[in-house]
Image (cartoon, rainbow, N blue to C red; front, top):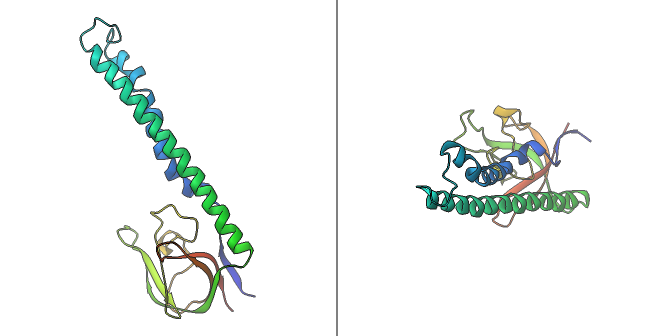
Amino acid sequence: MGNVLYELNFNWLESLALINSLVVGVGFFFVFKWYPFQNPGIDKKDAKGYIGYVVSKWIGWIVGTFAICLFILLTVSHVIDYQEKREILDNNQTVVIEGIVEEYHPMPLSGHDSEHFKINGIYFEYTNFEVVNGYNTPACYGGVIKENGQHLKIKYIEDDVGNNIILYIEEVE
């Protein structure tokens, strides 16, 4: 048995991108609270601009509710996806490939590209700019796949659109 370099785990830091929708939602909820401080008296029915205030209040509630619902949906979906992939890995229902890394293309530190390579003709591609349950750490950010010639054992699954999602990486001695 070789050195395990990566095994699927739930990383809350990768899930932080989902919080954007929560922040937007909460922000929109408080637009109508902030607006009267910037425009004193605007919340009175006879004030000039009252209709704009009411409209912004409704937009705040609608967009805020949508964004918070989106956050909940994305978070639940992400957790369920992790649990499904973890079960697949634990039950050895993955495709297993062992071989030498070839055609390795590192992702540049600036991003704007993906990292990809082949093992025995099987293509793997990933970037850390996507929230995904599976290996997605390029070498420039501390990833374990660093060059051509590495002898690896990889357990992976194919997603609905044909991408190979890495769930386990082991360095073969």
